[in-house]
Length: 137
Image: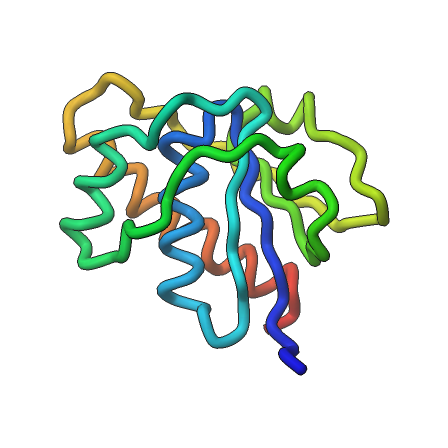
């Protein structure tokens, strides 16, 4: 039996911020946390800039793809993290009470790679400690 906690990172398109957060959380806290991400209106694919920024940091990108929140709504989630204001406002009701935190991040979509790298580092610096505190790790 695993005592790993599950964290859902929710965004609108599930193509940039939430995907980077999923990869960072799984890399940094994989022994304690199972991170997944989803979107309220998922895009067709993960943004090329997000993939490039993750690879530059040596983070795994295999298996990252946009998912609709409906695909994960029945998962046993211990924490929901919304990373954009739209996702916070349209966050669905989960079958059971799930703690939520909101940490908005800049959307680097259609911006240069440097913007994706800056957002990746912002996620690492702010989201990682917030999840650790929220889950009592």
